[in-house]
Image (cartoon, rainbow, N blue to C red; front, side, top):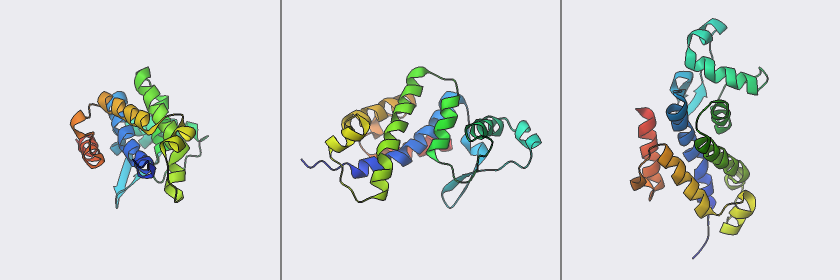
Length: 173
C-alpha cells in the first residue's frame, strides 16, 4: 500500500474553513456571513463604515473587537483566513472538548499545510506524524469527532466531496 498523504494534508485547510464557520454558528451563534462579503468565491471581511455602525451591528462588533484586539488595533480586514476564524473561536466561550478539537486541528493545519501547499512533496504516514505528532488516521478520527459535534452525518465521511457539500449546505441554511 502506497502512503501518499499530500492531497489529504492540502484538503485540510478548505475543510477546516468550513468547519470553523459551522463551529462559529453552532457553538457561538455567530453568522460569519453578516461580517463578510463574497466575490468570485473569495470571502472578505466587510469593513464597517464607522464605530457607530459597528456598535449597532452586534455580530460585527463581536468579530471585529476580537480581531482588532488580536492584531493590536491594526487588523487589515481583506481576505478571511483560517487564522482569523480560529482567533474568534479561541476568544468565544463554549465547550472545552469542542474548543480542544478545534485547536488541535488548527495546530495540525499550521504544521503541515503550508509545506504541502507550496512545495512538491510526498508525505508518508511517518512524515505526517513527525510534523504533527499524529498519524493521518488519527487526524481523520479527530476530524470525524469534530464533524459529529457539528452534526455532520457519518454517511458523508467516505467522500471528501460529499463531506464538503454537506458542510457547505449546512452553512448556507
